[in-house]
Length: 515
Ligand SMILES: Nc1nc2c(c(=O)[nH]1)N[C@H]1C(S)=C(S)[C@@H](COP(=O)(O)O)O[C@H]1N2
Ligand SMILES: [Mo]
Image (cartoon, rainbow, N blue to C red; front, side, top):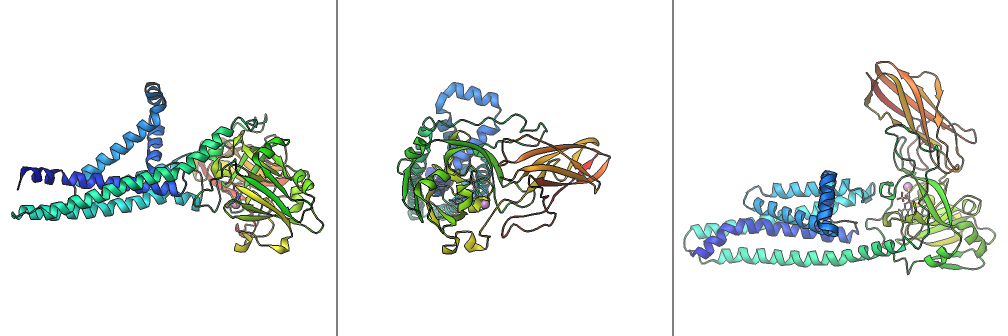
């Protein structure tokens, strides 16, 4: 055996590991791009590393390298991952290292504050690292097998190098494919980056105010959470595995159906019209009692009522069928779009262009209705029609045709199952009954009398209301129940129902221990 081939035999396990690692990284990136996720697994890990690094160090690093911080961090993560994979190549159970990296990347995308989403949208986040790990592990197995075969042949003497050549061909093939796949990933990801850039370019054109939280809306109880929810932290619900990427320059909305005159508007047309700004709390019909599929934001856009008036709604219409760029539909009662509430085509959220995941460039926001019957993201079509003429996406799947928000309240402080100091205990949370308003919130501790809570002051009936109460709790376990009464005098029912077909009802209950 020549020294050349023995040297090759020595580095072959590392090559196997690095090439398998490269395949893993490439597959992860291309899948994330195909699913139109904001970041690939590598960038997600880089962001996690940055977030876990002490702020002082991060600041020093940015001062040192300037705007090159992200590419440098991504390069470090890439090289680090490949080095670990290289080391793993030497080991029979090297796949464990790849699985470990896959788990790390999955955690990184799941905790990434820039990736919103629940349910399917959230689950889709782990598809790229998950499948990439499978591919990486498979490549490693193939390469380690090929290396083992070559080694055996070399040990047996009469090596003519065929097995070693085979190893090289397989490794070269996988490496080349990885480069091509990785490059394809960059190319596919470009659409997302283009729309992201178009969104950035709109920041100054919108002239939306950032929304100043009204004095007294936010109660000062630790753990209660924000009254205004930033876009990045806003709950996300939609059926889109790959978020729609809509070019704001070519976006149009068509208003048609039972109207005298069809309207078609571009984003520039909307921006030319009088803007309306309002606080509106959005919530999801599939939010269980005490759940967190709810958020409050400052929306800027154009009211829908004047647009419908301009189009001239014909007699007999009672609904508007909304359609999104990705074909999702919902049916909204005509009445809530033509009365005096701030039902709007929103183009800004908290003073910025809508985040892509929340409907960029334009979505509908309607105070008082659950999102599934009103809040179409990436909206492109409003058809004035009749409820008996269509079935929308969720009504086809067993959900109610109409979805007014039910009066609800939840305890956020203390959290269920936590310990507090005995004595005076702060109980706090929020309550909502959009477009009716919250008049009263009461808590009941350990089945005792109902205590009326202090309420935050809110600018309209369309938002959630924070509440708090101070109660005395001796050492031991306690149960607190909350109930809200809307401004029409209706107290929320204690009857627990499931979220299907028209939203959960029932009182939220939390247990805690004082000591
Ligand atoms: N295009 C589209 N719009 C949609 C949905 C959807 O699946 N597709 N889901 C709706 C539902 S069920 C809710 S609760 C709200 C959630 O809006 P958010 O993701 O901005 O919080 O969007 C609504 N708009
Ligand atoms: Mo929803």
